[in-house]
Length: 226
Ligand code: CTP
Ligand code: CA
Figure (cartoon, protein in one colour):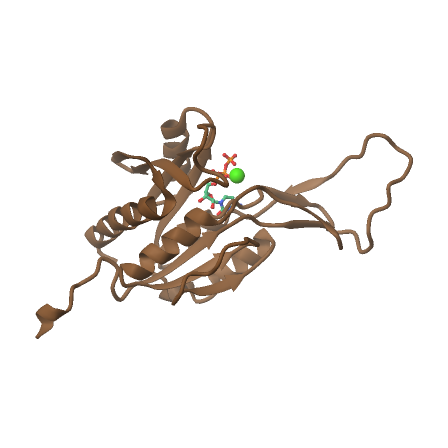
């Protein structure tokens, strides 16, 4: 009777996926952000669900629909994304950081709308945000942790450096300088980099690429005893 049930690559696994941009408030009406559409993270969530996982998306503000049967925690700032990522993390088997987290946020948030003033040059003071995926990867009883690396040059070398620095298990290297792929696009091409592996996945729709990535990530995860 058990042969009627296919064992899916991520069945029984709990997967957290960060996605989209973060927004870092300047005042009640303004923020610093980026052009991340959330498409790659949302496609990974659907693919992980189809692979049998229980999926929690931790998402910055995006304009696309949450996939069916995926739990979504909506956040704005990097700090909120970090807090949501740590919530229940002990039960998480696989953490995928697809979000485009703002590296810096304003040092302080003005209580009232900032007025224009007479000066021609305005200076903003920014402070570094916490690194969410690095925090997860160095947590006690860490999940299998996968990051992304958005690069415009020396893509694999920078990705290998990020993999080591953040203590990740795998990193998905993304050449964001190539036209028609990556940020805000429907297609992407990536290189999956591990401690001793490099695999190129050629340009295709993000849904298709997400399924390929989930299959490969699951293979690496299932090879490693938790
Ligand atoms: N990331 C994160 N928290 C941050 C910054 C980045 O979790 N505060 C994650 C991203 O979600 C991604 C990975 O780290 O999975 C790499 O992001 P990237 O912007 O490429 O790297 P950075 O370490 O921020 O370095 P830089 O922007 O200088 O290249
Ligand atoms: Ca960054």
